[in-house]
Image 1 (tube, helix red, strand yellow):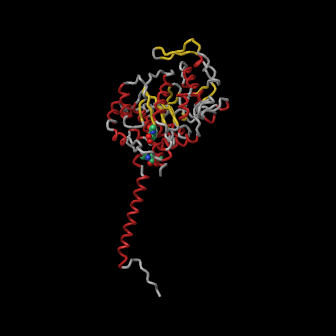
Image 2 (tube, rainbow, N blue to C red):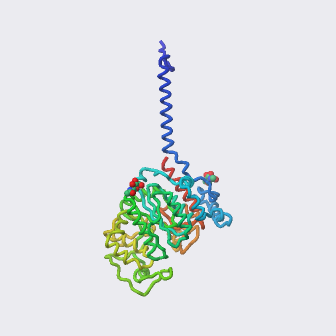
Image 3 (cartoon, rainbow, N blue to C red):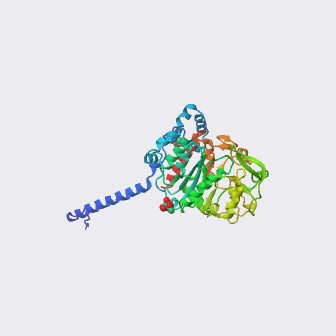
Length: 425
Ligand SMILES: *[C@@H]1O[C@H](CO)[C@@H](O)[C@H](O)[C@H]1NC(C)=O
Ligand SMILES: *[C@@H]1O[C@H](CO)[C@@H](O)[C@H](O)[C@H]1NC(C)=O
């Protein structure tokens, strides 16, 4: 009546049963290991080992006033400032053993996703001092599939150049520009530095899709994956500020300028009219452009003629890129009609807080007041700016200075690394 059913196998079935159990546990183990190998990147998260970690970044990003005040006080404490200072020599020592350096500083050694691997980015980084700021910027944007050209000012102290050299020697895809300029404020040399890197990057590898230029005081607001997705969304267009030249700024390209004793001076000599069929536009030094745009800048006869004409202007970076971006033959450009103007807020290239436009947003100001300090009417961000900054669409922000507020960079780098790893789970 009751059917006998067995849980345990018959005497003869034992061998088979054991084999099955052994195989099953082996398979489980392999699957488990694979999952662990592909998912567990948690050791790459930045842990609380720096002096800056005295402040709670979660609270700072949530705009907690007490935590932000605490960060402000620490930033100006002599003892604390001493603790966070790192010299060129210390970096030269640190990067002596590259394997150790890469591991200790937690550089990424593999592309985090296939999507990023298939979309390499080329960077030009123009710097002249502050090795620690540079290294932290590099670490924050570093991915093995990207390319990084570093332009070090010819005037930089030898120890700074040595430290940069030592760091770059640890990576195959990071290198110092083959031609270094003596960069004079507001002069052509600033643009030439970027063009030198464009040349090096263009011939080094054909796989990269977009070119971005940075300076030492920039820091990313997005992870590499987020940057890749934003670049893809541009669909082959460039993104940079380009607007009608405001009254009074024409003198910058109507008069001939000269470097005298290391300073750019305006002369009374008139420049020839620009060799183009469109007006001269006004913009910024920072651009997000396609590989074809870079090829155009390096090779197109019309572009080269315009570049030649721009060389004796004042701050030529602020009209050169903006105007090229409106020429019909430029790859990724937009029409010159004024309705296509792009402000710095609308471009994704750079977030900058200008002192004149700060205030109460509900009363028409462009952005809330700077929580750090102003240098030449530009905000050097403080920890209190982060919460707002991370809601903006820009890929990078300017300016950061770890000497003025080390918490802004610390909280940003921790946040970005955490976001990058979180996206993998
Ligand atoms: C930092 O602040 C957050 C939010 O208040 C809290 O959850 C977390 O435990 C704090 N972390 C540390 C290390 O105190
Ligand atoms: C370009 O970069 C990719 C990825 O790093 C590499 O596989 C390829 O060999 C490079 N090509 C050239 C021409 O260097």
